Image (cartoon, helix red, strand yellow):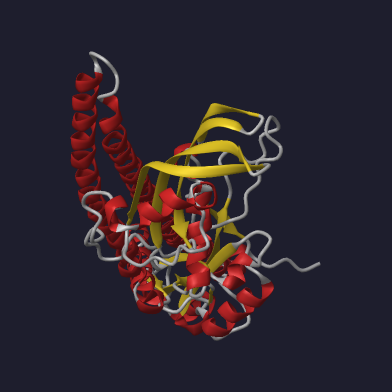
Length: 448
């Protein structure tokens, strides 16, 4: 048996140690790169989510702004209707006082005092109607300013809104990662065309119906009867009046009438005659086409008083001519969901964005890190597809009432519109088609 001496084995372990050292170094660099890349990807993903969510919040605020301004327009429309209705009612009170006054002298002792009181009422009503006429241009100006603000916020073709949205996304990206870049053109975006101007007569009637349905009882009808008629004999006072939004778009007009109806038998038939007592009318614009409106039965029940109301003697003080306004109290052009959005069972607008970061700006061995492999260790320094990392995120803006889903009110479901400010935001999964588009932009088949 032959044995080698220890001196003959000296130095044979060195090659094995070198191989082991290279393996340890490669593993170290691999783990370093993997950890840094995971951290960079996580940071970029969080940035993409923040950018997408901020864009969704911006869109929701835009839609809620449209809803708030539409509600403010409706409120000012109702205010114009109230002013017109009160003006015609005040004029009717004034003409009633003027027409009743001469007969008060027939009452002993208190007749002159009552006549003076009626004259005082008529004077007060003239001052009151003048103040109401002055209020109408203020509300009309507010309506026009609100409608104009919608156009300014959106811009032609939503250009202003989209520009501001991109600025918000870029600012949020910088705040999360100064080296992150937001693609100026989203992967998918249907905010354009989600809303549009409603400017035709039929489209403006959509808001007009909301306004008309929001009228309180004073504007709808101011009717009452007083008197007794027995066997076609007697006298009955009939008060009729109402305020209408003409054609649900053009402007407001109001009429109030009071007539005494005398019943008597003549030539074996029951006859009725009308004697006008009070009448008044007011309007937000001249020559409104109101022939189809009876003003809660005024024209059919008190035709003679209604004709006087439409004449010069029946127009309220400050309304002849009509108050000087920009829009005449008409429903303006306003923002509402487009036909495509209104046809949806649950209107939703979505946006998918892409955020990138150049490989040279990332903290790993092949990027901005001070630790760099040399020699054969460069084999373990993976390259990015397209020279950058990318992350995509999707956001949806949807409509939901705060009390939706409340078991105590199961029927409180409302379709999305721009009449209530209940637009909210949620992040959503990216669709396969959007992921493929992001991969194609990346220049590869895998989205880092």
